[in-house]
Length: 506
Image 1 (spheres, rainbow, N blue to C red):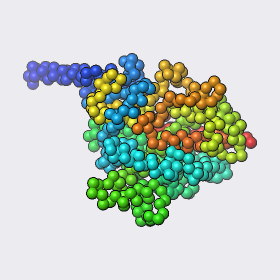
Image 2 (image 1 turned 30 degrees about the vertical axis):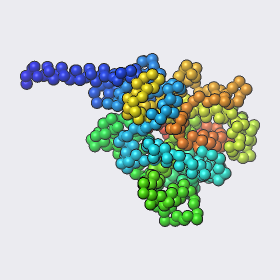
Image 3 (image 1 turned 180 degrees about the vertical axis):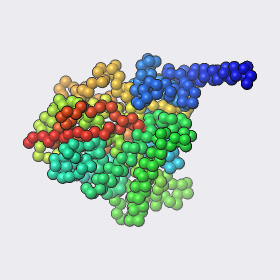
Image 4 (image 1 turned 90 degrees about the vertical axis):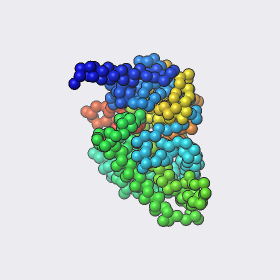
């Protein structure tokens, strides 16, 4: 081959590398250069292969900025890392879009459905509608029926851990396993509102199976989408290593279970007896079926509303609960303070209920501190800029991916002083009462605020107080303390943890 042609090819290649590395939109936020194919993703992986949010924090510090900008492949990507920029991303209409990715399409069987991964007028309508009518069954508000169900479920778990009942799926040889310990309770809580039913005690194995599908789906991808989003064709070459096979298989199992519930409701539906959210939605479908402008109420949308409610609750809440147990084992002094507070306010004769919550500030502070330090949604859920705009003076091109660096914000020493220290007292004033303003953002903010925030906070509180009232979390003698590192994925999930729940002496 002609040496001049080889030299020219090499020259063109290096020019391409240089232009790729140096290209940036004018006034784009500071950040690392790009490399071919994956852009700055190569450098993020080099910084921290496992935890992308830690790699981003390393880059943020390196470039001394609160707003980091780089390119994932050809996609302009911006990470807001302080309170002001995060709140701006969460509240401004220009940032309400979602990214149209292979994972989102696969989840919706080819469409962008539900409320978590969708955007636009249909998303806004369906979100309002879902919150309005799920609230009737206890989602986001106080509901005596739901609280009674949870009390029964929590007492059932307490009885298993005390040895009065047997369930080797969650308690064996004196050890309990998390997050499995929480699956049945949380699946039943959501299912009772969405589908008007609960799985029986004999169905614990099945509810844990369904919950595990959600966990596996979440763990098969990453906050930024990873290689499968940047190069979707890779799923055809490496279906397992890319995570695509697991995404598809787990998704289909979840969808199949929800579809069966919808089909059963269609067979037994009656206008005179509305049982749950599915029935309410079926009624809307019936009333709008002849709408000449088309109806926003469809059966496939109903299925993926159920998907969002079930999977998001089970995966995020069990991750938080598992990490809470991890931190309690590391901090027995915090456990002791919580148990003393519980003994003084509730006693041992009954399980705690939500009326006790205002009188247990230290318990509340310990949960808020856990959500801060663990930051399960370390980068939130990716937003999309729907038009050319600005963020804190920087130019953000249309269709940029914009993410909220919650991990960076929650670990900013300028805000928290000692962010790597688990210290519930940071959420209390000098008199021991909760601070009136909580500046942590574990559930996001604005119109993209997690729809299940109230549901999540209430039910995690009930579960944890019920367990801490009756048990002290520890590890068997001779075993080392559990790792504080969660499992990476679309959001972080809890590690598999076998721990010892020691019954408290009466």
